[in-house]
Length: 283
Ligand SMILES: C[S@@+](CC[C@H](N)C(=O)[O-])C[C@H]1O[C@@H](n2cnc3c(N)ncnc32)[C@H](O)[C@@H]1O
Image (cartoon, rainbow, N blue to C red; front, side, top):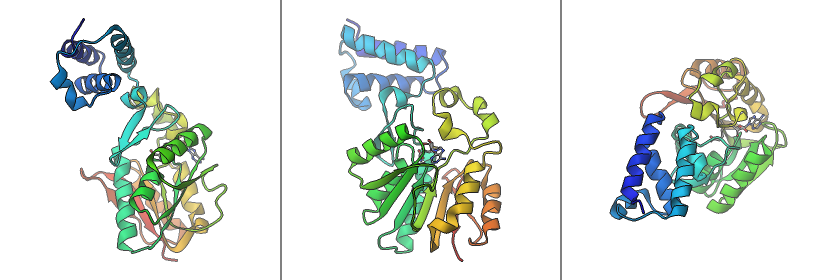
């Protein structure tokens, strides 16, 4: 029977030939998943033999990855803010970029000392933002909307699994929402329609188009979220939006037109890239 290290080495080499940007890591994560082990423990068991069933499952997983399917969809989960979220091809895989926005919302809620902030997460997908905020700010009341019934099913599962009491609403952006919030947060679709095919194949071929497509100029959702926000945001409330790294200026102009916000503040990641905007309502 072939041994673990031997299998791992050949899977890593194969994925490298197939163009995976992280072949060894992928090979390790997929094998650890199938063996029900932590990745770190693989090397302690380097001579463990793999039986036929394990080998067949591993070959299947490696073949999917060789077709550039994201590892998160193959193993069905992704870590976000140190918690494990279930993901399927019905939801966008939560990204570390979005953790930057979540971090900002948490520090905002704490610095403004809002006792029990009412938070609305638009376009919740896997529920990553809404669930994390509820768990990090337990006194908060979190509502999340999502147009895709299938995505919402995953968000609900994640909330139940992680023990987060979030109220989910199926609908188009603010549809079904009839109150005002202290905080509105969103990571909406923001890729220009014509640029989707130019994205890396692991994104363009596997992640839901509905989660990516921001219309012709990529700004459709920002336009709607911002122009309708006055109705759903409390007087001293704030909007936090994840953006593409070249969209800060355009999103700031959209906000300026509403005449209810202070000038937009740009949220940067650790590498100094623009990752979001923060709009504080002043009128
Ligand atoms: C970029 S993904 C973000 C998912 C999640 N918030 C995250 O950060 O990982 C955008 C999400 O918006 C949803 N969506 C698209 N159009 C929508 C609409 N009109 N109303 C509500 N949600 C929508 C998509 O189904 C997708 O789940």
